[in-house]
Length: 262
Ligand code: ADP
Image (cartoon, rainbow, N blue to C red; front, side, top):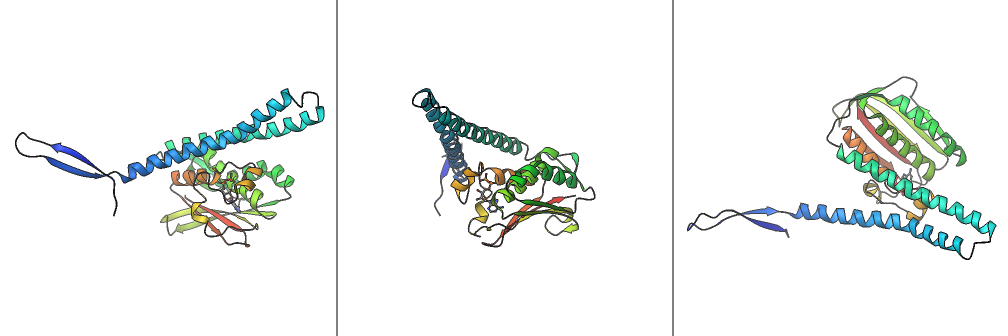
């Protein structure tokens, strides 16, 4: 097939010809391309709210200077746009932190049941506002793994928050211990976050953990999403040597499963 190749001169003894080695550098170029796409995406995501902010500042200084009602409305929008920028930066920092630690095994003793319970309490008010019932099953007994507590909390928070945002009114988190997970080849804990929302077309599923991949970007932005949540989840689960899968069918809700070695 087509390859990008560099020629390295590895030996050229005087009068004895030249020895060359061939090296496939396609992967290096692909990595460079991904980095450029990422920078372009980040710039775009930051520029959109920033443009709105600048526009409203100009309007507040000029045409709306004396209109108290308009001022209150514009300040509300500005607060939302600034919040969006701040969330994006937080998510970018989380992502880069996890990436830089991907090869470092986390070593804290963490109780998964406690983390799921505290994520559901933190999200309680948000679920209430959206008329969503959050149900946790199997969190009565502690389930200990070696992990990074902050990062695992973020995994469950992101998945439950998505269930609230894109689901259909009921989000269930079920924790179950397994004597042996066939893929991880050992004892494991399985955490399933399911919702009864509109579900996901199978076409999109393999790409959902890519950074900034959204099925409906307008909807995601409306919901305050950054498009990085599932990318962060995948990296954190990888760092814990666990596995992550998404099962969904259009019209039948979605299930996000995290399996962690115990
Ligand atoms: P976002 O910040 O956009 O929510 P995520 O990485 O968390 O970013 O999710 C990526 C996309 O996956 C979302 O924009 C949405 O289209 C889709 N998605 C995530 N969770 C669900 C869900 N529970 N039901 C349906 N679609 C979902």
